[in-house]
Image 1: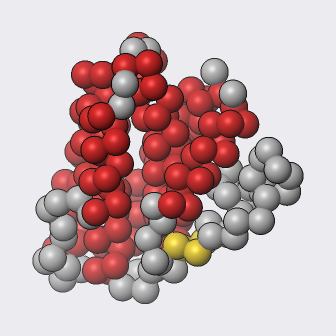
Image 2: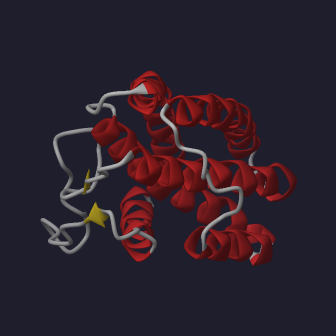
Image 3: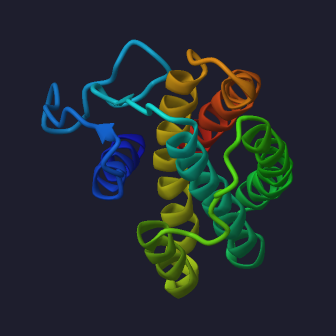
Length: 188
């Protein structure tokens, strides 16, 4: 089950990757994607974000997706463990959204998105329409992919200068904890 979840998460990550993410889709075997030596991310998950606006846009979409998908999970998840994870996502990502807004303002970024982009909205619709017996698996797969992307994004941007880079550096350990935890849940 772990390998199928990893493959599904990898496929989902590739399907919904924005243009700023570059993916190497060459797997080491037909059953398991090649992983980089950093953060258990698919190989080639390097992110190139050149401006504070690009980072703020991508991070805002990520945060909104985490919050909205996890609110759905609080209502639809069958597993207590998944519901507990979802509650942490709502709490942590709501706080991160507020912190990012302040950092964006400090860096002169005033156009932080307030609505989801089309790809994330499609995922939300899929979760809303998921059957009860498929919901937990679908949510977990989406969370693995979303956190892999978030860790790559924040890792890359933390190397920059400014308030948003400081925010990325401060937030990165929490995102890595989220990724580690959702991968543990996916393995069960």
